[in-house]
Image (cartoon, rainbow over all chains, first blue to last red; front, side):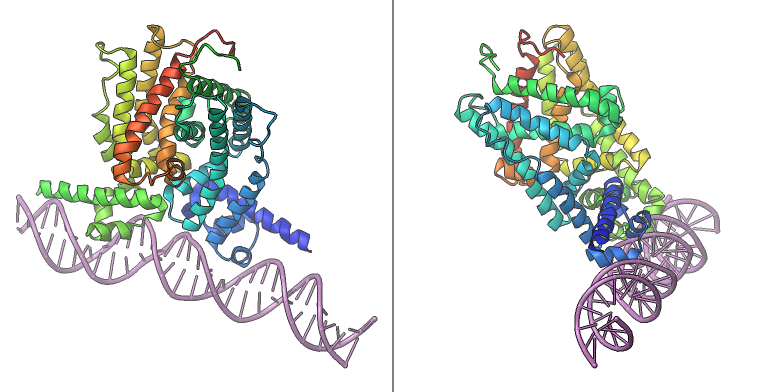
Length: 217
Length: 217
DNA sequence: CAAAATTAATCAAACGATTGATTGAAATTG
DNA sequence: CAATTTCAATCAATCGTTTGATTAATTTTG
């Protein structure tokens, strides 16, 4: 039935996502993926056209599963700019840190920038987050919540860059934090709240420079 | 002569560095490298043993060319903690931004983490920078220059992560900054000073944040 | 309804191309 | 001349992809 077909495609995509994440596009072979998924090699091309088509399909499924989650925080008029910023960061961290394998895959592809159809898709995808943050900053400056001479592009790079650095170079960050950051428990119970706490404080410090007298949050 | 041999090896390493950086380890073929370098394919194995040996050689040459530059800032007693921090960031940005292809290569390898001998080397290499920063922070806290309850691991991740994000996702950051950040002129004349300026201000804001707010961890 | 025709799904096998590596002879060197 | 360097040719292995055949389900037909 149609149901089974979708399930099977989904299963292939599950396996492909894992292997692509672990080994990269070139490092992962179609044989590996098909045998791991328990399907015939020809099925990959039958369903997805090519290896790159399979790669794209992995991304599109993942991206569409994200896209629904993050909308409309910036449009909630009941929240202050600070609340919006906090909510945005909370959501972002919760979402991405559990998908850190895929997260690595995304940034390897962006860094390589040789499969253009893919990098364009990823760019479009990532810019949704960037623009959401930017909107909050712009609004916060306009209504006086944030200092007016902040570098919004740079601070945005800091938010995403700090998290990426921790996730994408686990060998380094494990040494820095004194724990294996690939340990699920440590990640969830210690690192995640620590990151949120740190980022909030960092943003408060930067966005309020030269007006420390007002700490009403 | 020995001189010529070294020159030739160096030329091969130049070409290999470029191609590995552009295409990744798997994406770069030994044929491509040898033909681009104008040498016979067998020479790569003759000189470097294997493809992975060539890859390692590229790293070792690059790393040793860095290592000499950054020592002993932390040991200069004539400088305040703030001066040390500024100098450290200046040096770091100057060094890395011009080598951003290689920089990308490093982080792709760290993210992949499948060639262990290599990631161990890179880890060791990157930790030199991390430890240097950490030393400055620790010292600055001890002598009262910096606030005592700062998260040194996180702020270190912010310093490196912010720069990495800008360099490693040029498609994104170009959109964020409104210019193609791969443009050498823009990078040198605008982005570099902008980054330094931003990072100094960010650090001042965070490291001096007033303590009377109740951000108890 | 039952037989025939069509379609979709799956498979083993093989395709040509490319991979990293190796060989043994030739050329170059000191 | 002996040692080192370079080369064309070749190696087995693996790559992504394609093929033609087979099965199972669906649709069409009489």
